[in-house]
Length: 209
Image (cartoon, rainbow, N blue to C red; front, side, top):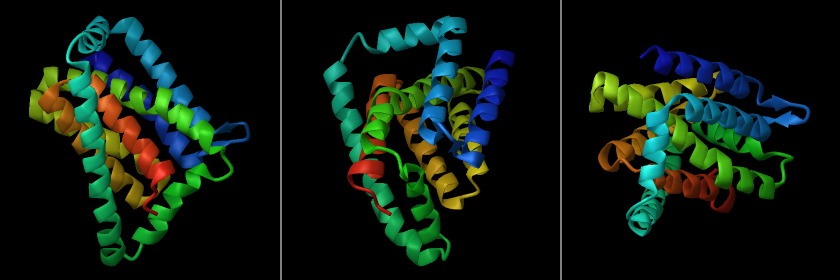
């Protein structure tokens, strides 16, 4: 249990300053985010043998089914955010500026770089860490539902450094959605496909802001 919580604290120490500063100079938000994920996954791969076994095992059966369901879940989550964008702008006076502020993360950054990092590192990497490492271990320590809810809460809370309630709320929704997907189907591949496609769609291809 100590390894789970110490790694979680280390992850928070990496991500909270990122959301506070949004990067600086050559180390912009996207390079910094990618570096954080690479560091965390390297540590997990070295020290958590059960994580390695789960990742390898997940790619050994029903690949097409998992990819298709990942695609469907990404479309479903996009629909939730599309409707949520409309509703929140009517309900909360700060929603519009908060949503627009999220899209400022891509200001002055080549879309192709964002797309490549999202596709090959950020999207898959977040699922491998937050669900594949953190949620899996918390579920083992505290039970399936408590582990799921604790990991979703942590995933949302690390976004507090942004100072943007809409980003924290969005992270909370995503944490619950992908967390439940992992709880129900226990497939990191499915989650990776869902997260990656949703990232690219909502941030680059069909932004809601």
